[in-house]
Length: 297
Image (tube, rainbow, N blue to C red; front, side):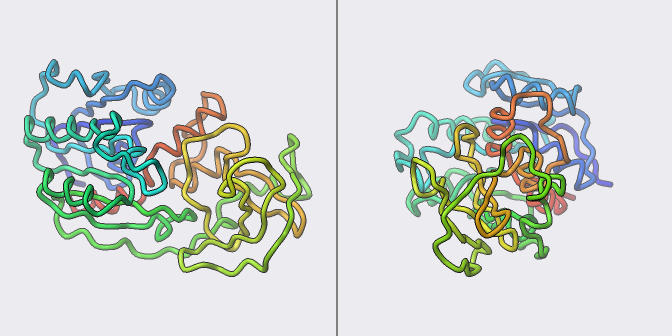
């Protein structure tokens, strides 16, 4: 069992960092969190009622904290993402990264971890220059049924790729939602259009749902492969879709999405399904973070 003093989570969300610390068997005196989403706050306080919530990270100069051994966070990524508008540091959400840097320089924790999406190399290099370390790219598919590339900047030493676990969608689905027991009208039809070969990223896209919208939300995946990266959009038909037969599909449930992020089952219960999907998509893959934390001494 490793013991640190205090930890501080910025953009803390549903506090996947605390779940990871617990899983890595790292004890801490106090966990401070900066988060403003009321649904995420409700989920965090349900599981970790001793969390001291500090409010908006932009007010960090008003904080008076002591003995921060570990600082962690992943600022909103929409401005960095290759899949987004690529506004980079001109996006107000991306500028929150500099609040992370300011807190890091002010409190000088022994360890820090910053997570974000795969992005343009020039922005990645700018972040590396600010943090003083190069990132490691880890795909959550190594430890889960979700293909999710993320960059991790940290001064925690000796971080390697986590050991690969052979986990696919079929390993995380709710057995009560098999085709013979579908509930709540979740079963839909789709038009199959190819044989669905497993891609290098572990995805097996076998069909296209008869839906309106972008092509990315129409894709139906086979249980023998991975899920695509979860998003924060939990409304309409944007959830990931799994095939249940040669002609039918259904969207993944919130519990299945928790499993994709290696969260405990029913961790996000207590808010609406829309907010559960949003909170899970905003979160971290816990087993990746706990793998990194296990190198804390």
